[in-house]
Image 1 (cartoon, helix red, strand yellow):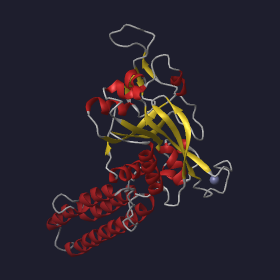
Image 2: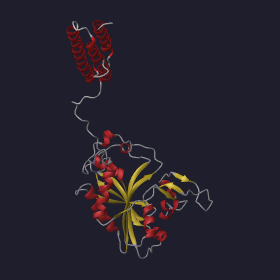
Image 3: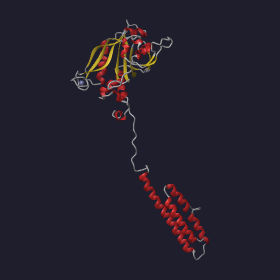
Image 4: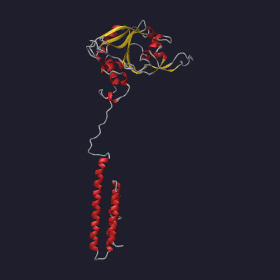
Length: 351
Ligand SMILES: [Zn+2]
């Protein structure tokens, strides 16, 4: 074998290897194999030329240099072709603008809850949190709703356990998902003496069939004020102040008699319709008024349950649905949308 046939063989082998290159890695392997400084095929060929006969050396040297140049050029061209095809098929395109990060934001019900908390806190109320799994005593019994009280039927309850611990009585449910935030009235009064000025926001649960205005899980804010000499006028003044701060200073407020077991007298509060300003529309069923919350003077039986003297103290309480005011304030038509976690809706609310 002589150097001339070597050059021809190397050229043929390189052509085969060149065709097989599919990736940058392949390219690097072929470059190392042929152009590596020590072990490379071309370097080995160059070294072997030292032993060639003097008369053929210049021509062989020329051929070997041409081979080296051709291989270098072919590999360089291949490299360019590889990079061009990768740009279109691979995902990395350094010219693309960066991806925008999605920022989280507060849920509309959280925004409303915080607005309500802020208004009451500026009026001197303390905000409390309470347990969502409540016992029968705090949710019903201490609120003047003993076991056989018909008012319990007003609140379809999710019971978690069907007996009172220690009594062995299977007829009376003991543990439940709270049906309202009113249990917090009892929990607070049990551990504090008057004056009392609190609100307690949170999730509540009822066995309602979901529809436009009902969800089995919803949010309420409870409010309670107790002291000597508290009257219905204080209740009215505070709620008008709150409703006008929350909705609009022009909002009209009216009270109508109602019934709740834990307040006496009790009232339902209506505001002038936020959609038609009281002129009458489909939302307010042409009455011009929207029911917004329930309230009343704390029933003496509730004070007795927590050890307050009903001869000495009076107080009032209210409960307002956060979902209800959110529907009105944001003009959302279906309460279920607040719990579906559909980002297309949630992204429309401010941060
Ligand atoms: Zn209306």
